[in-house]
Length: 274
Image (cartoon, rainbow, N blue to C red; front, side, top):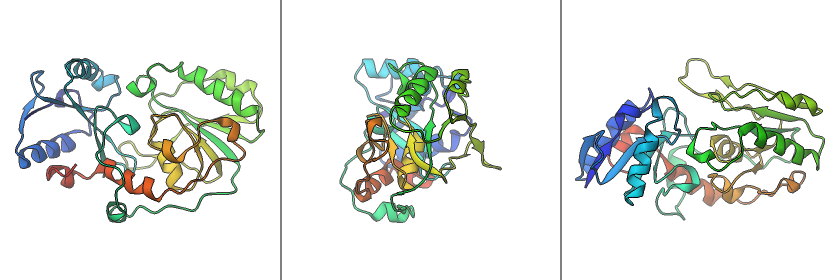
């Protein structure tokens, strides 16, 4: 089987991951070509059709229109900069990451530990996403979604609301000033990291996020989440904001076990493990 790695349109931190993936393909008997449309499998970086990755949209559509699989490599959320998502035909819950019902071995290997569900907390944190991502297709504009979310929350609670935009999609939403006790807060980059940001959920009562990494981090940290069906936290999250005052807090161990199999280190990728 021929894997075409589209390294020309990877993020600046993608080279070690692509290199490891190429090694893993060869280790398992496959062949590697670069930036060619005639492979059996396309391998791209992210489904964010923006900046360096904008041309990946054409590649994605080319392979999917022929019913050929696309493997998407992406920054991970378990240990950012160390573990990387490797999914088939998407990212997050839209992707195929392999079998479910896994044991705890890999979660233990990654030292993943669940904090108890939080029964206190103050703030409701809305975490935005990049509006040029394939994840956001068929959604309203980000400002429209945020404002509608705030309006809905206000039907049920007067708790403080914090909106944090995606670090690379910092859309100002002036209309937020019309709401009482709603704050716009830029995410803070962790010093000496490439793109790691502090989620800072210390005072959170709940997190609202459509389908990106903050929701999974919140669930691990014991914070109830309200998410969309494409979120990796969907199985342990809440759908309706009507439950904002009494969110569901289900058992998370099986979810964590399976989450551990969505991300891999470059060493593991080079061995062809994912």
